[in-house]
Image: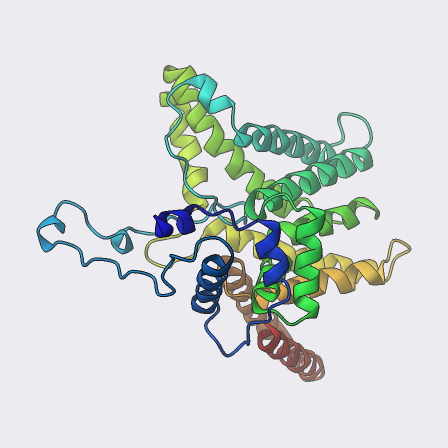
Length: 353
């Protein structure tokens, strides 16, 4: 049947990709509907001419079955994990054995989080060698963890896929631009790039705290499931403590605020302040300040959970700083001028996003 063949067709076929790469979909047309029409037209011409150009309408649901099978739209959206990444599609089945539980990517993230936490503690309390070495080891772990989560979210890139996206952006193709934007705005990409740069610079105060917070969430979530399958008595004893951490990584039902996201956003502003203060020391790095501030601007103007919590943290910090600067007229005037310039920047960023 032509419809079945169309539904099962592999759209990575070279004939199709070479065709679509030369097509530009106008920005004022609905992308998905236009792409579907192009696919059907191309498939009819090149694969099976019996395919109808207009898709068959979906039959209306039987009201008698509504009580047995509620629509998917009624399902509640699941909260994003507190590590800042986009939540992957839910697994088909929950691991029912210890082997199934351990043989997952989450085990790698758990080990990286443990290593990161250990080195953060060693950096703060240098009881195992140099604190500087512990700092750089933690930065390496944060870079690798963020990079792996970026690949998990967007898939492993191929040279041909990268080239198609770049070519599409140069040709002002809507889908290529959206693909590029989703990667550029991904917090895991930001973290991977930032911790790569942090690793090449002298230790920066507060830099490890945001990723350490999310690592604590990863560790608590993993151990809760691991102990439930391996050592039930230990799970009953320790899980209440794990749940206290896990609860901080989920949205508050009354406010919608995720505590760990909010704390991470506050710590990121603390990192920016530390970088600015370092400009007056031999360890200064103008480039690092500019890059980190640019990433904060992207997060501030983004529409996801990261943007919501970054704006919330900025508002809270502004209120506290304003209460202090208002006591000295000259300082308050300077602060208001700086804030006005930052407001212009955030508005410009919002327009581009």
